[in-house]
Image 1 (cartoon, rainbow, N blue to C red):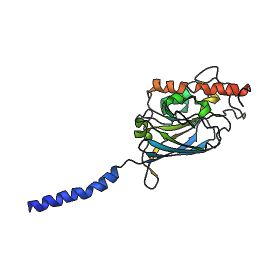
Image 2 (image 1 turned 180 degrees about the horizontal axis):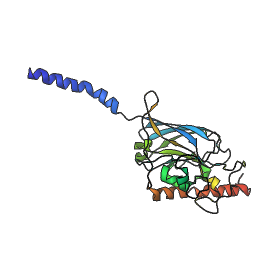
Image 3 (image 1 turned 90 degrees about the horizontal axis):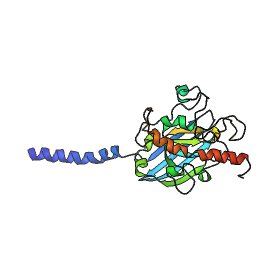
Image 4 (image 1 turned 30 degrees about the vertical axis):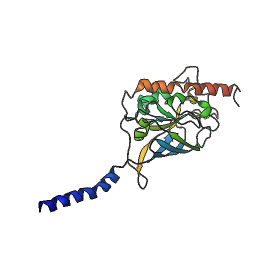
Length: 252
């Protein structure tokens, strides 16, 4: 009798293993809904198919400024508490985030919420935070029809659901140009804020079978790896230089 009970118990455990393993399996499909920042009017969707550390990334967007480099990054401290944060005037907490009170969320003002650069979504070549300023390798289309397969650092692949997609550069004053807002960039007082300001942000979430979102990031904290974040954000200052060069007719 004891042998029979032991056999039944072992058999039950073996039968339970596939279901348990399937339940614990990490989702391999991720998505993000891009919503406007700084009242840009921009929006979009991000899809990420992850196989190990290899990510097939596609971004489709609308109402981004056409013809100017849009730096796109995965932002956040992998595994940390990162959020898009208050992005537009009128959002709860925006006045606190807008430290200088100019009604614009600058790159530096957004860092405590969405974190520093974890990955640069360039169109070719290097994708590390070192390429955060590679303005010649970012999309310029207003629809952000972006498609690329990227090898992710293991830490990024393991923590995608704690990161965010942020798109930079927006025409803040509706003039039809980027670089003539008249407000200095938070990265360099000689640069215009339009070239570096966030245009949209979206939290990356894991998708279970059937396309149901299963994960989300936490609440922003005051110290979210700010030193590293500011270092990553500082590279975006080059975008402002491109804006000035465009205005001076130095770029076609």
